Length: 260
Image (tube, rainbow, N blue to C red; front, top):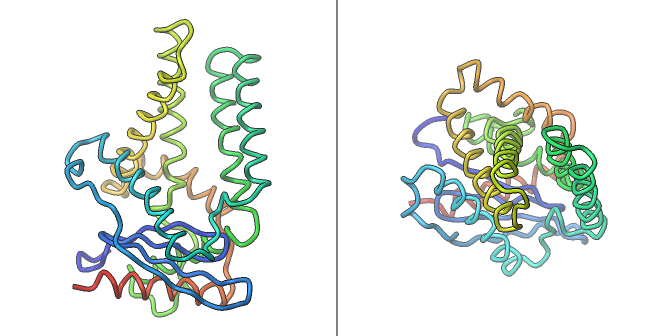
């Protein structure tokens, strides 16, 4: 990616796309009536954490979540990936199933099974409605901007900076942290479990950043491979022209508000 290009991220919505820039966010959605609506605004930033390994990753994730209510306020028509009763039901079921897996299978096997089960709500949300297609729109729109591709339709629907690449390091870190905690404390408290989850997220973001800096190494390719397969098989779908139009609108808006 050229140094002159903005570093962009995003999140697929059920009916559109949210794009993050360095200082602003922009979103475009297709309403139930077929109208294309766009909104944007500044995003919260805690720059003091930028130079602190571990902390900066958690802060960046927190900032991304803090944008969501701002988007809903400015663009009420935006439908979030988890904004569905069936997804909430799957999340509740996954929580129960994960607990049962830990009780019935002790040690590494139980924790690994619980970790895999925890992915079910996200995968279910991606496959519901148009989320997978708009996830493809996100990758295509950003990749076309980064590479100078004139038509986003020709860009790949898988991307190097997709959040799916966090899955492998986060599962590994969470598994290792949970096993260490259970060896140190016989009955860990929920707060201790939460601390392990937070530390796992921080470690995963650092690994994610390392893989981007060393993308040509075998280790980085191996760590990214599960994420690419998740994108290819489950997480993304080739969008149609109407969905790509929404992606172009979101990209145009983020470039407008981020302009000097």
